[in-house]
Image (cartoon, rainbow, N blue to C red; front, side):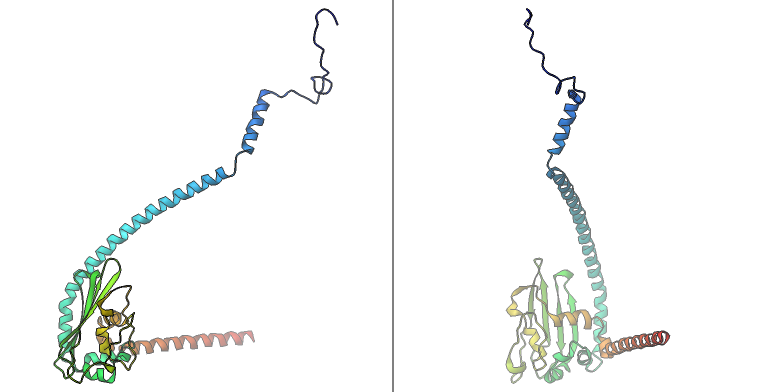
Length: 283
């Protein structure tokens, strides 16, 4: 072996430099492989978390804009209420003038009630006799419009009850509840509501025809404060009858319905003519 004691030379025929198909990997190649391995090992959740984060941010921004809109809407509602209150004061003397004229027209409110499609069934025959003494009707919002309103029936002296004014009042509270109060009618001897009963029921739906309209004044749920209480009769009087009772006194509502029905019939006839023409062309 010689005096140098050199180590044996390794066989490089397969793995060594003499093999043309094998090259010793460079440091760059090792680094690149390291990067690829790192990418391959990155969990998909990272992309998902990134997307979720952007979505949350977008929703938060959207909520901020929505809150801004709500603030504008609240300001608009306040302005609308201010305008409504202003014009309520302007309308008030006009309503008083209207009531004075109505007093000179016999059975005006009785006729208006009986001509109203949603109110006519509320009056029994005895109620109609009492309504002949109805001198005026009055609907008045509170000064703060959103806090409530009252409906008052003013009667001339009559043989049925001692009262000359029957009132039903609706008071609205911020938490969404409503308090209803009504006049306790002082019936004269031998007089009173149908069957001598107060027909109180949740929702204050209109009573059957065999009940008296005047039970409506006692339908106050014992003056309890109720949430989401709905009084159909009060809403019809306030929103439909009161703004223009002359329309119902003159039966104009029926005429409008009749005109609408005729228009519908004309439309149907026109459609029928067109269909017949199409059939003729096809044949």
